[in-house]
Length: 177
Image (cartoon, rainbow, N blue to C red):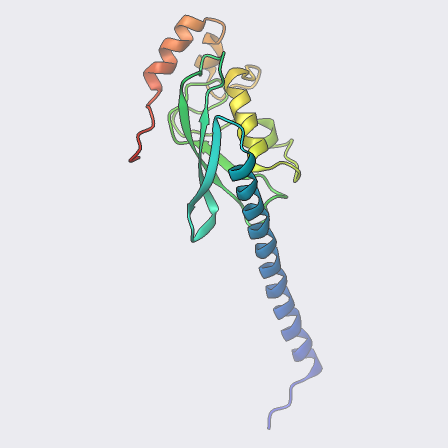
């Protein structure tokens, strides 16, 4: 009969504890994302939406943002992708525009977004709804001091030229896409 030393037992239990705590962490992230989804479905302001891409994966979402009334983006709708890290909400999700978005703070090629609350100003109190509202606001009020698209930043104060460039890049969302 094999004897198990106390050291081996301690190592085994710490391993199962580590696995257990990572499962608990995943469970708490899943719970948080489920709550945020429910909140979005019940209280989402007009012009923003987001939901999981599939029932099997709560960490990958698709969303839409409509340009706010009174802005150069009014009447336009953009698709975005949201990827949540396993340690959300302590780390910001990765968000990118899937619809080409001509904007000073958006990379027109890859869809990356330069928004302080998604980088150095991130806080665990932010929610998907907060992020979507911030992105909708950013469309009409860019930070031209920190552009990802310098051409768009340079044209921002020339609304007619800006709108021409915006519409050259914009692709309407189709129901099947």
